[in-house]
Image (spheres, helix red, strand yellow):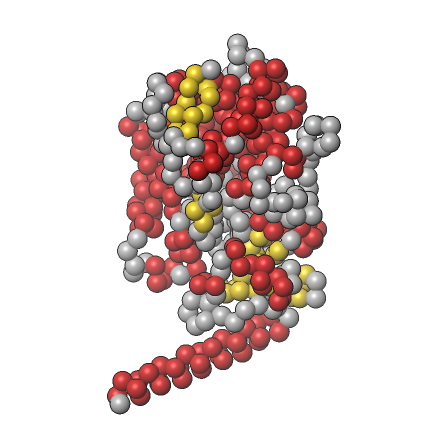
Length: 479
């Protein structure tokens, strides 16, 4: 009897919480928020949030709807038209950073630092090496490392992540590291843990910070490693200060230090050692995981479709040959290879909900009012898998980016880096890395699967924020 009474009380409390939350939601935003599914107390819609069932919400609520992650209000944008209107048409209003950005930052200070990073990544010509030179150099080390597998099976995860990480090291620190270097391994250990965290459901930490502080899990290891990595970066910054040549910046840190000196006259500069360390950490986290996972996924897809690999081989042999390394000017003459790389990014749909934005002020979108500070999820899958632009989007088909004459065909729906003012700061770098890594690997090797290609499973491992390939091994055979 006592147990029955306790159950009844518990149910009454739950129902009351639901009614209270519903009333609270209607009051917030003066009842003009986009509609959405009923949220549960404490957890909100967390258990209901699945990229596979988003189309069901569209049928019921339309292309813009509201969900709750814990008590955090989130507005989801679904479809090309609404994303274009919000992220591009109202770019300034939707340029804030959402709660899943574990490196927090907003406002004018963040915008200044972001502009600085964009400028230096896009126009990188520091010292004697351009970004392209640095990627080519690292890719040659990767090719040699692959050659040393001597045809034995291996998991490509560490090979690719080491290479991409070293590209960032070269840009930020001025030089690459030997893969066995202890300092590099310290740096890499943090990046690898951060990548695992990014592709893990515990990204929800940001919506339940108080609760997660008391729960065990990989997020504690990430924060410990992050502290160690910041110390490592600070050590490199101090080394750069001692050898800085203001007339010849060698890398990102040099450029930042020179900017610090220029801004120091202002008295309250946003360019500080602390902001330099944070910017550097962000470049590593954002620039390592996504590119290496895209490469890993892309190689798996080619293992499944050897006929596509063969077409890429033929185009590489025709345009580049075997005697020189690929360069970015080759891309315009390699429409099929370019289409394959674009289709890999479209098909894997790496971050289905996109990295979150936030509105910087109260903003009207359609007939709704979205309050300042609201987190925005641009559902990139709804654009990358739009059948109006990409027929049979569930099928991997490089033809999605080729016209009837075989020339490369651009698409406004291609948004793997998001769109608007919050577009990925490393988009240009990532495009270069993907093209040069991809073409140089296939210039030198044939990919050999360990099973029949028909049996290769390219279904992604899906989490709250990302898609990643299943673990696999394969062999590379010199061409």
